[in-house]
Length: 260
Image 1 (cartoon, rainbow, N blue to C red):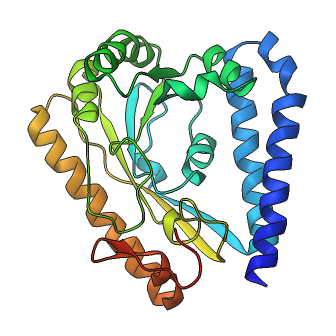
Image 2 (cartoon, rainbow, N blue to C red):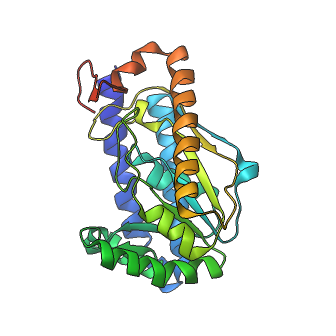
């Protein structure tokens, strides 16, 4: 049953995305705000699909900590899920993303027209310069900048591998940062076909004020996110111990049938 539900969901998930990408083409004529609303529609319709088909619900906590103004939102990245899910909670946002995504047909044009920040990840000096050039303008414009501090998806429970880019962004933007913990990797693991039932929890943690030393900020950010994620994992496992199949143990992902 888990396989069948996951199959149906994945088909409808990508069908829904295709319909939105093609049907939403007129949004390109109305500017970035129309495109951002299209992105939120993708998030909301995906929530509906995975709840109705897979029994996978979502809970957002700590919304009182979420600023709608110029800020950095630094989130744990375990799955494709958070790339669309986080957009539903923010009015005006800019993602920091790898430039290769802008090469995708049509989808890449949406990203460019929505003024997302595409960086050259393989060239650190170029990437940092791109951050400096574009992040300040986005913050000044009252946008929330989404960044994944580890730079790529990591399995739930994997040892932290935070990069220096988030601390550099924090320093040059002189903006507050909202850490985000989540447990999506237990239910929607990276590189996995299966979508498990339960509740994905996203928790917006207390704001880290602007102006800290980069080293202090980096330490505080990692401590808060990792500590909260561990708590969310434990909470989910208490309700469904089988989710441990998608939790890293000893540096390897333990999976019963499907690698995560």
